[in-house]
Length: 191
Image (cartoon, rainbow, N blue to C red):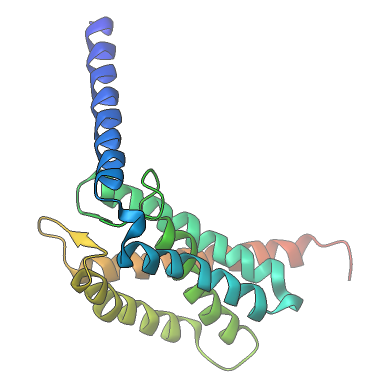
């Protein structure tokens, strides 16, 4: 019984490998790296990183970047789940093996980083502004990406599902960051 189960598992892994090879071949066959859409995705990857480097609050750098890392990791898992389940994918990946890297590693986390940064030392409400940002990303930005052919959704997935994903991630990142800030204050040896 054990050998049959592991053999079936090995076949599933091989199917995944073949699927990735097909996506890589698609990337080369259509010379995606020469398309306008590809270079727009590169811009979505690089420009936010440059802006972050220039505009991040250096006085609270660790806290802000920890929040951004929490957003990045959580979005990475959400995106991986969605792609593996066949809910969505990216026809013009910057790196074929990492199709969501542009949005999950740069544009979306950095957008939320600036929302978080702007609410840190002001009377602005994080949850209000982060929710408004999630609404914009879900119901304006993602439909724009779909219209440009940069993002594809499949099956019964809709923009409200994307909003729920964004909303859960922004809550998780805020609560995780708040917990670690509290732990740091609670157990810090410097007063």
